[in-house]
Image 1: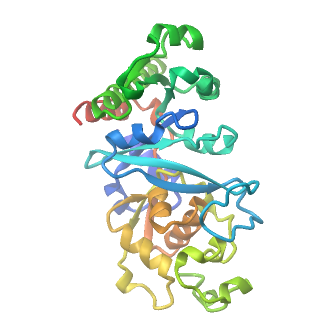
Image 2: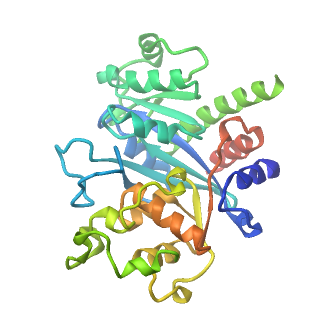
Image 3: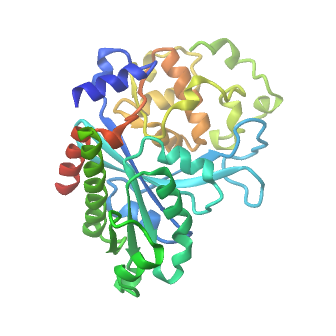
Length: 207
Length: 131
């Protein structure tokens, strides 16, 4: 652990001082899925802060942004994403980033996925196809992910097995039911994700 | 900060316009139009911590710089800095990069290979279970 931290500090041009060692290690999980599938609800259920909203730009150069607020309908302006924070301990903090609702903002997905532990793909089983881009993305990237079927109104409309068959995800990808409003469900989903990530890291280490 | 001399000479006419709140300022006026600092590579989750206080900063330090130094007395991510300042992430990165270059803050670039770090993942798993 200590070596991992110092490696990381060495990679930083700015954090060379010993004082930087008191910084918590920041980890990141991406919460993806279609529009209005409950990503911010999922993040908010476990975050210690109300989910914050931040904006990024399609291109930062030559951008005619007259207002910090996103101007709807403008091409190539800003994209908003919500995120939350979970303090894991005095030396570790976990961030949960919701992907922008619009799948066309792939540039933002790359930014979010870089250095992440893995992803949660939230699914509305009534609009299963909305999650295909997220599943494709994580599969192509080879990062661990979990498929979580959001229980809208606490009701399961499809069995996870049906969702698994429809999505054709590999056997090592958990498919679970999850009420995104309930902390315990969100917690269980994150545990499954990190367990999978840990197994993968262990098998790679053994090689 | 290195750019103090320019703080009073906005390079863009828009910056000379009356400014009611930081919200109505064109975002890249805050960064003097710069977008390509090395800071552009800071991860969203990269932790920023102040090495000074706003009270001990130069009189010419911008309000945004002071605010970041105030916010980051306890470590905060680049994404949180952006959200709290209500500026795009790209702007926050440049502002944080300037402060880091001036030794006003320090930045940990974040876990680059967390997904392959067994010890880190074990601690994360224990931590999430204990929530």
